[in-house]
Each structure stands twice: as C-alpha cells, then as structure tokens.
Length: 82
Image 1 (cartoon, helix red, strand yellow):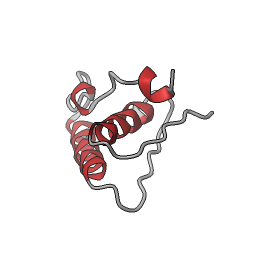
Image 2: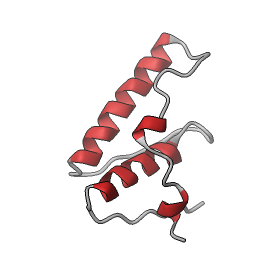
Image 3: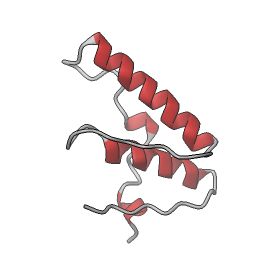
Image 4: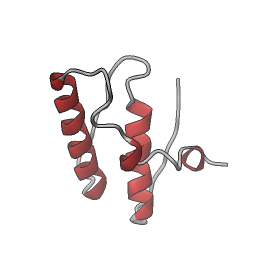
C-alpha cells in the first residue's frame, strides 16, 4: 500500500477550520491556510512550505493537497520521512 492510500481519508473536508478551544486569531490562520492550500492543490505552481510543531496538522494538510491532486489525475508522490 502506498502512503497516499494510507491517508486517503485526509481531505480538505476533514480539515477542521474552526476547532473547539482555539481563539479567533488561530481560527483565522487555519481558514487562511485551508484556502491557500486548496488553491495550491487546484493550481500547483511553485512551492508550498508547511511548518509547525508536531501535531499541528502538517501531514493532514499535505495529505489533503495530495488527495485533491490525485482526484484531478495530477501526478502525486507522497512520502512521509522523519
């Protein structure tokens, strides 16, 4: 099984833009990240850098981008490296 198959359930729909317990500034940042990453998935030009602490959702959003691109039949290589 490829890594992309293992994260098939990680989509933009599963990305919480309004998680409970987050302040408005954090929620606004999540909404902006969601929008920019979804735009990138639809029109992948240049690079995108995902940075943050462990558990903040980098792999989830990378998986959502990869799944969106795979659905559009764009070539995708998804690797998880430490």
